[in-house]
Every structure is written in C-alpha cells, then in structure tokens.
Image (cartoon, rainbow, N blue to C red; front, top):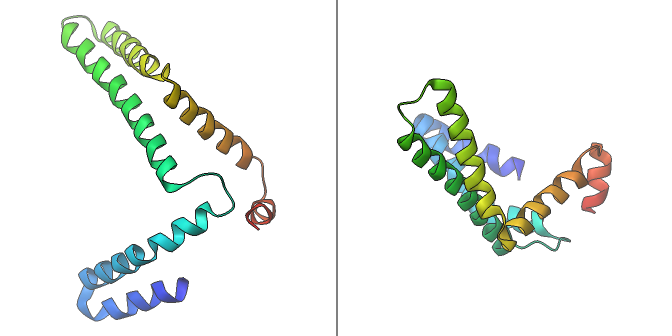
Length: 131
C-alpha cells in the first residue's frame, strides 16, 4: 500500500499541490474497499452494521443539540450561568431520551466493548489479535 501511495505522490508532483492531492485522493478511493475488507476480517462486524450504528449515534447527538438549541431559544434572557446550566440539562435530556431506544443502546455497548478490548494492549498484542 505504501509504495502505491508514494507512487501517486510522484505522479501528481509535476502538476503541483492539486495534482498530488488529486492523485492521492484517487489512490485512497481505489484502496478503500480493500482497507475496509481487511479491517473487518475475522470480526462479527460488517460495514452495513457499522454504518447503522454510526447513524444511530449521530441521531442521538443531533437530538441532544436540537434540545439544547430549543432550550437556548426559550431562556435567552437569563444570566450566562443559568443559560449554560439549562443548555447542559437540555442536551443531556435530549441525548438520554434517544439513548433509551434499543438500537442506540446496543451501538453504545458495542462501542464501549470495542474500546475496552483495545485499551491497555501493546502493539504486539494488537498485531497478534489481528492474525
């Protein structure tokens, strides 16, 4: 992969920064399916399941931000400290209201499990787990 990336830089170099950017972007785009298949080998995850979980997590954050914005519009005349407290409470309430949905909870559990499985591992241990 590295020689291909370096080659793309060399091909784009005569055309300036735009040529380098274009050639490296095309190489990244072309290699993306291979990188994804390599990343998901020997796991239970699929790209479709990962995408669905990311959508749920993005919706959760969006609802939290929307609740905070709505609260900010209603309490804009209060002092700055009270506005911050109301915004924090509204964001938390919006986030937790969506987090009670089962798919969102499962996505959060899987993310937490993934983070726990990689925490504290040295590089050789991570490489051994990939094989």
